[in-house]
Length: 204
Image (cartoon, rainbow, N blue to C red; front, side, top):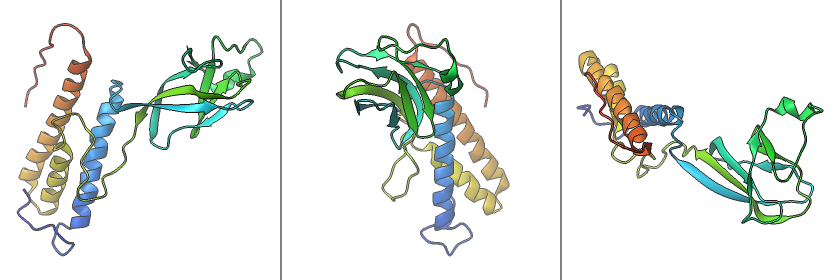
């Protein structure tokens, strides 16, 4: 697609550059899906409650917390926790109840209220949007909606063509990249809708 060998770093377009562009294209694709709020790449993790402990570490790949449930007496009988702003903690009218738990996110931790009065296995359930990270190994593939693994490649090819001085070809490929991004987002939305199909008209 570039009409140049990119197996090493000796050419005008280097192997290192191509790998970097692939990951930038991958990041742009992931960001566009996350920004839609369709909860693509949502994961579930569970943590043990510790008596007297309110702070719990978020998963290292957590990009966004979607839902928190806490079971103080039984992991099978959980209550959905309401998210609050950290500044609300000092509100004198704020009350804590096991029947209506609260939480807020600070850094790479989540803090729940009230503090557990006893330990409980898998008492904390957390649904979150995963950040799969960059591709590093040659065999790695993007974690994108089915049928769109090629999208980061379009971005890398466009950047390579720009560097080779093929401006017109680069612009065409970059337009294709953005078109595929929009088509991918439309399909994610359509997948999550109930009812009849939606017809989306797009002009090239």
